[in-house]
Image 1 (cartoon, each protein chain N blue to C red):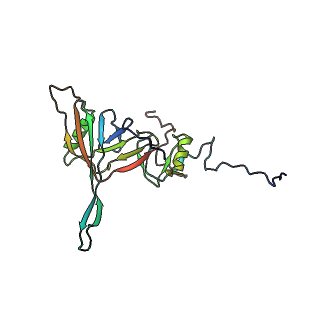
Image 2: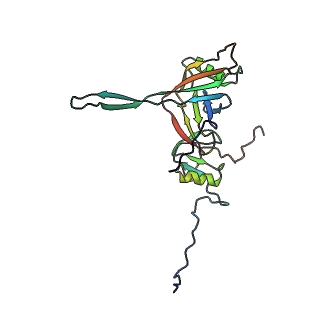
Image 3: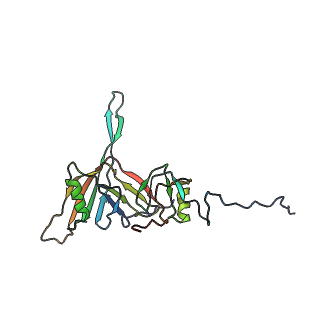
Length: 90
Length: 152
């Protein structure tokens, strides 16, 4: 004897994140624990916003799960690593 | 219970900050970093009714980080920079940051203060005609604390 399911199982929806583009999370994050960025070797304190566009998504997920960063919008304190710098003397 | 994966100093990265605000990788010249044993001041008193001490705990004390490097004659060497920082009147900033797993993402770093750390002892290269030892130099820097961070 089989029972018909009353309703279809709901499909899991991916967690929405602000600024989602091409599967990427927003590149700015709130620092929860002191970090040193490999891009500029500078330290950033808890409470600061940083741009992590230099990191792959797997790394960002690790940091989020480890409680080192949280998603946040805002002006980053660091210079994004993948943004071309203005040329000098031109 | 799984054993932890042990770490050696094979991938360690050491950086130096002299004067400015940026740490510079010194791993190609430095070969030894000795982290300080950071103390906390304590005091004790005794009472007649017990055979053990009553303890009081105070502030955290400073510690000494010792670094050793390969000596070269170059004015771009870290010994030259250390000597300049040491011989500046009253001493100049000479901060150290070391990362046991390397200066790459997900590893941890430890550093001295970046505002008040100075060299308190500097030993230059010494020679022995009967030895083939690589000439080394050594510096001791004093810091009020060691700060930890994660590379990202």
